[in-house]
Length: 275
Image (cartoon, rainbow, N blue to C red; front, side, top):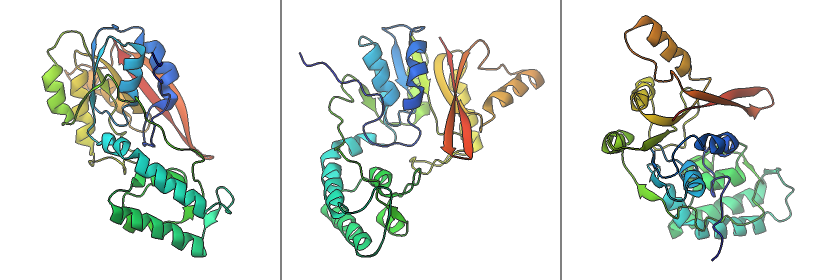
């Protein structure tokens, strides 16, 4: 039997994927049941769901693909073909150089043609042609951007990535209501970060949305991800001391990791978990 590939990062680019947190996430999983139901409320790229299923093959893992990452995976061959052709157009260009003149026109023409043919993964394309952490979601935005030759040298591979997962697509609140009273459930809670760029997500988040998420942590077993930009932890501590409400993080474990954005900018990623 062919050994299943274990992905340590999402097969296609996704802003906010937890690949750098896996070294802390996997040991923390040992505190949880190998046969539990894991509900990934904000599935994103599916990396957390994939990691749980790889770590605990007998667990039931529900991946809420609200951002329709599956569509990008389904079209991965079209994406590989487009990038292969762009790589050929830019074969004489040095890596990371700005793309100008006729070459830029040829790149944009090929992308526009691919769009007419039916599908372009602009998130993946952004990772190959735009400055780091810049994303465009359509051709009109893309053609206004400065392009760089950051073309990937090899094809993207996603074979087996979602194997064994139960995939759904619904509002996290509805999914939580479905499982909140089921025994032996652990919630994976990784919403878009407050005060952090969320441009590639399907919906726009306001402060109230972030606070609503905290309700799923009350009395449940969970993994929750945030950053020091959000001040959520300090807010919950204030609520506990100034109001009759409890702090959902009381008794939980905390892991942190420094994330560098640019040479002069960084923030702290936070994982809070409560078995």
